[in-house]
Image 1 (cartoon, rainbow, N blue to C red):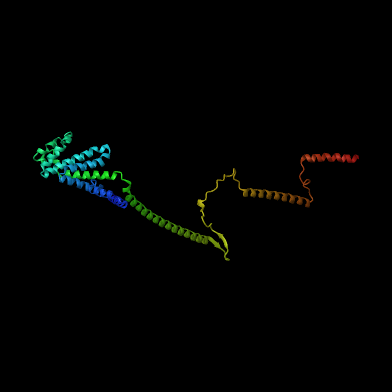
Image 2: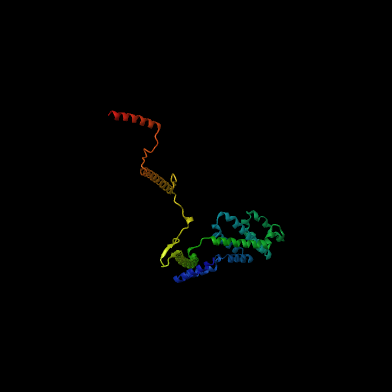
Length: 329
C-alpha cells in the first residue's frame, strides 16, 4: 500500500491547484488523524500496541470499530469467527498488560464497561474472576495469555490477517494510476528487449541460410566438374551422373509393369527360322545336283530305277500285243 501515500500527494496537489484552501486544511487534518495509517499494517499494529500499553480502552475500542466497519464487515460470513477470535484476544491482551503494569483500576474499568457485552459469551465466564485472582499468571485459565509465545502469535496472526485484506480489497481508480504506469513502463521495456532479441535471431538465421546456400552452390559446381569426362580437345564427352538432386539406383522405384503371358526369346525364334531356311536350301541344292548328275550320265531318273515283277509282266504282255498288232498291220 505504499502507492497510497503517492496518491495522497496527487490529491493534495490537485486541491492546491484548484485553490480549495478549506478542503486542503481539512484534508491535512484528517491525514494526521488517519486511523488506517495509509493502509500500512505495521503502523496499525504499532498503534494498537500503543493504545494497549497506555491503557486507552476507549481508543482501542474505537480503532477496532473503525477496522470492523471499513474492513471486516465487508468480508464473507466464513471470516466472522476469525474476526471475533482476534477481537477477544486483543481484549485479553489488554487485561494481561494492565495486570503486568499493576493497574487494577484499569482492570475494574474494563469489566465495568464491557461486562454487559461479555457476559453473554461463554469464553469470558472464567475471566470475570480475573480481577480477584492474586496470581492470574499461574491460573490455568489465564496462564497461557501471559506467555510470550501466545502474545507473539497473536500479533503475527493479526498482521497477516490485515495484510491479506488490504491486498484483496478493491482499490479506487486514482490509486491505480502509479501502479498501472509502472506496469506499462515495465512491459514496454520487456517488449523492446524481446524485439531486439528477435531481430538478432533473425539476422543470425539469415546469415546461416546464406552461408548454407553458398556452400551448397559451390559443392554442386565442384561435383559437376568432377563428374564430367573430357576428351583431348576439351569437349565434354559424357557425364557419369546427373548434376543436382541425383538419385542412386537403390532409390529408384521400378514401374509396376505386368510380365507377358509367355516369355519367348525372340533371338531364339530368329535362330530357328534361320536354321529351317538353311536346311531347305541345302535340300534343294542336293536335288539339283542329283538331277544334273543323271543328265550328264545319259540316264533318266525314271528309266534308271529298277523294275518290279509286275512291271515286267505288263511290259512283256504289252510287247507281244504290240508286236502282233504291228505284224497284222
